[in-house]
Length: 473
Image (cartoon, rainbow, N blue to C red):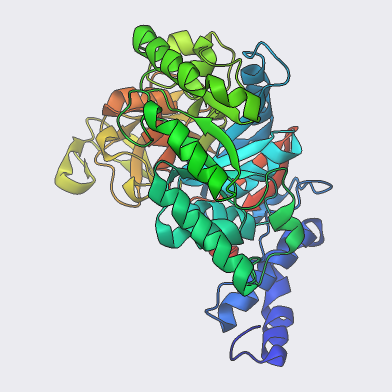
């Protein structure tokens, strides 16, 4: 219910102010945005009414007119589907399933839309790092098995049951907590389904509610039980009617360290071989392992960064040979263009001085958006209508960058600030090299201040704007 809200007042706002900004060509997106705005105007209660759920039968060539910011992240769902196909092809058996990792907002790409699209193209399972991420997907109507790969605290077990998430357990305490939580729920007849999510969303899964995955530490020394402790944990699960869906491990350096990865895989296979007769599934292959073909003959592969077309480290040249495609790019219009005379200073600290008459464009993107401050005086953007590179001059500030552009640049043209390729100056992996980090960090730092514009088959599919859809990101 809308708390302390007059329905008449809500409708008056909707019809008086809502429709004036939206045309007939954008009716569905416009209506949902208006409703979300109307609700936001009159209640602080978090109501889940995502504009990002339906992916079919809706295309709009005018989606850009709904952007409320002149910079956005463009997410190419065709490339995502292509990458899944490439990664599946690394497996010797077509029976091997995919657990797609959509943690951290699908590595900055937007977890809701990405998850729906992955399910639509046949991905069997999804995985997140923390319970809240799984709840977020359920609240945005994502069905099917969802794994939580991080350590789950005792007080989070109830949420795993409530939203039918598959927690990772590593010790006896975690198993007993799940058993106790499940027993209390059965004994007390407590409702598990949330008040805003239908049973169809919660229970449409081939994994029994209350299932767990057991993680084995084969050498990374982070999460997981020791291999020798696995039989004991399996026995405790059996004694308490806890269904063990799968066991898994995580490779520390599957892209760059062949010997260590082979040792980890051998340890895992020896520890889990007795479980095959019990029907317990096994998975181990992360992005690097899939590409190097370690453990790809097990029940599932677990693509993360590679699914988004980005390399496990910064070896872009070798990575390109696999045929994967970066999924996301950062696009912006300039908001102001100034013609500066020789000697004019630009930006904080006066770090740049024009050495001749030149045009400087300001773009509404800064380090608060995930555009790295380290790119001050080092970065480049691409003028889309000509393909030429333009240098970032002066300091990158919180909300803006300044770029030296050709004299004929107009405010109506777009520039690519992060390209969906492996360009050494403008791609995510190239930026990672410049600033001294990895493409994971470049992607996951992309702020939710950016709208995400999703394309499929060359058409604009949908628009996820956090401010309008109660964190639909």
